[in-house]
Length: 285
Image (cartoon, one colour):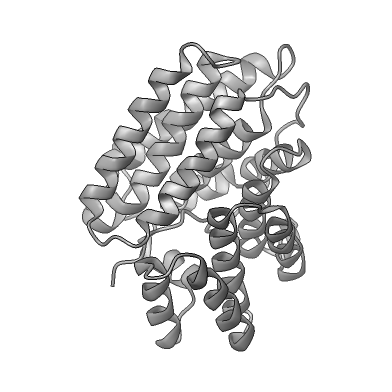
């Protein structure tokens, strides 16, 4: 079964990081294009040709990077944001096309390191945009979800990044959606738990404005409800998501998964093949 993989956390231990300092804003160009890209991804969920989708993402990135030159508030930050954003979107499909993704995972690590270097250099001076904290959290979460050692090393850093993004008030739906999944996977002793997860899922839904944003918040909240045994409520939210993008192959595949008795989060956790797609020579924590 092909399911577009949402990168998720596997296990987490405390490696905390400091809080955000000054917040910077992304350009209005990037903010609008991010909304457009979310729409692009939701529309792509209707398609079954993964290679065509990946190619469309490459074209989208080329157009955005060309437009950034004259419109970015901070060109370096916004280029890193778009590289991360598109790399993650492509990876969701590559994960289903290839059986060996060690090299792609190491490219994700390189992206994570470059993003973190930017944060370290700018958070105390000219600041970091909340949306950049969010995409760095997503990148780190995806990278670490294939390795227990990586999850142990990076887990609490991901939480801090999502919290910095959510507190900034920019793109709250995406930051809260990421934080909700962190809370779902994290053990209670580290600050996770279903009640906290649900709070952030609902915050993500409340903050979502466009159909595409609602499509993702409804879908992932539905899968949380499935995981905690509320299957009727899950079905209701899945129908709300399906109504926004009729014919979505993504929704159809998740429903098929649910009908077999498995939730998307459980599927992703087991399907990721922990430590099978890591490179022991790369020391890839």
